Amino acid sequence: MKVCKFGGSSLANAAQLSKVMDIVLSDAARRIVVVSAPGKRHPRDSKVTDLLISLAEAALAGGNTDREFGAVVERYASIAQDLRLGDDVTLSVENDLRARLARRGELSPGEFTDLLKAAGEDNCAKLVAAAFCARGRKARYASPKDTGMVLSGEFGNAVFDESSYASLSRAFSDFEGIVVYPGFFGYTREGKVATFPRGGSDITGSILAAAVRADVYENFTDVDSVYPVDPRIVPEVTEGIATMTYREMRELAYAGFGVFADEAVIPAVRARIPINIRNTNHPSEPGTMILQSRRVSPGTLVGVAAADGFCSVFVEKYLMNRAVGFGRRLLQIFEEEGIPYEHAPSGVDTQCVIVKECNMPKEKERRIVAAIKRSLSPDFVSVEHDITALMVVGEGMCYTPGMLGKAFTALAEAGVSVSMVNSGSSETSIMITIARRDRDVAVRALYKTFFAHG
Ligand code: ASP
Image (cartoon, rainbow, N blue to C red; front, top):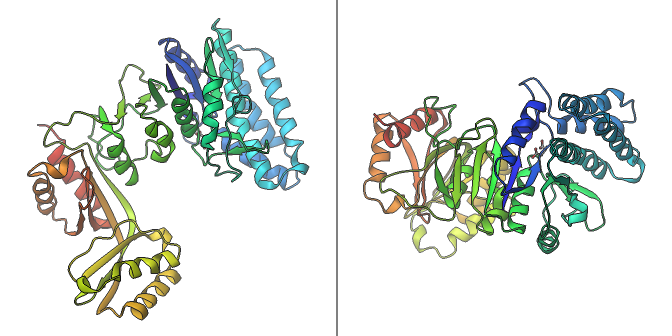
């Protein structure tokens, strides 16, 4: 059985939704369909989720909500009309929204906003089920409440309660036809609607794939595959990644590969369900398959990613290598400021702590430098900003002779100066820090060396 998830761009209008139905019906194994709320039809359009947030805000402000209400209803009405589903769908969206709005007084603002946000996916799933039925197919909507999708009560940032796998897998143990399931939300133990972070329908799909032990989790989006480099930096990249491992995905996603959030697919990864990223608009393309392991051709990489926004705290102290507890005390200073560290490359008498700039505002930086001086008496401390981390990723690359040489030659020939290299504990990647201004030149140079043929 396959679980397939369709994002907002795949459901933005009737034409897109028809493609979704064709895709699902072309393969009898596609039995569970997870949907987002309708997304943008064109660049200046709004996503239904954003319209719902505006509706919630207007209601919370106590003003008139007709305009926001009408904007949401219109999106469903136009899809229903174009698919000739009759007025019932539109009426039921209106009634559903009114019932949600009526609960304003009994819920906190966070609970109320989540209740409204969830309406996007919920009504979309009902509409998609109705569209399959109108085509004469056996399909039904399944509700997160009835199937037992239990989430924590952090509204807008809820976390899946793993103890609900049992009820989810029971709910899907025996069913006929196609089940259409709304993404993005579930229920707390107290029965309140809670949503995942934005983009959370990917999480729902991944959870269901794990719950039913799907053969594959198909994540349909609007790109043909994941590319080995960011096409905004290397527009000529045409060949996508055919297969990659979970670890490779994680390392590339860490450095900002934006096709999907790696954390969203953790449930599928833990259950070792293959993940297939595919394009609703080009369903014949095989997309990118993400697996536990893959056959690696020696000397190849899977991708190069670049993440901006790092800074590095550099500490030097003569005989640091003999000072017991130096590293722990240094990292503790960051811990006490609540700053997670990303990398900590070290030398004989030097230690760097690389953190994200967004986690270290100026006052924290001042306090950290003062604390290092006070408690570690270093010979020298400095903070460098505007650092970009290049992730050069490929299973086994650190064991293949010549790979590092090739990468550094490419960077040197492009005139990029490397400030730090960390290939420490990962067999799958090396991290190279460079100045932000060299980022695009560096990515293009690595692309040319490792991926451009001819
Ligand atoms: N509709 C939600 C959002 O826009 C969730 C999703 O699409 O995955 O964030």
